[in-house]
Length: 278
Image (cartoon, rainbow, N blue to C red; front, side):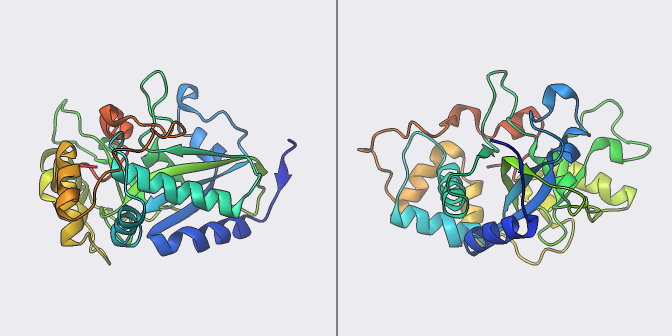
């Protein structure tokens, strides 16, 4: 199909109407913004002026999407319950908003045959202006010698209390000069603050403190914190105590990527999912 020009505001408006009520945010970007900061081996195989959209989950997603999903649909034991919920919400929104249109949906937990993630979530979030991706190279006079410190994104309103869930690529949609790359808010401008952030994320992520590097407008609820503090292998048991039973008798969903052994590919390969325990 030939590329078509569309109104970006209309695309984003349709998506927002579908997913914001479930605790998600969406941010548009051009594929070229993403590809320009990565080596060709990690680039998306689309033209630079192709439209893409980053999907984030906010703290509200747990109560507004996940718990209702578990109550109404339940989940299979074959893959992570949160991943199943996110895939249901995103795929439903795409089908409802863009019927018959070519949309390549890449989820944060999906891996290529090379074991690399299908997209680098934090890079996509940064170039779209959604969240600033703080890396070791952003600290002058580093105090860690040769120790590797993984980077982390910080949202201007939620701090670290969010996650990057998916990238939607509209393969037949081109955008022009009307979509200008935003300046990503630098929430942690000082050297001392960046050292504090990276050390909290890399060395003490279990205490949640890195998420509060900026004052968030909303954090995870106690129930959500209990869920994500529980080791993944024990989360089905926790859900059972909450009254949610997995659908043991269902056939596997052959359309989904059930890669529970991988966890979130970005966490293991380049820590591109900010919610470390997810």
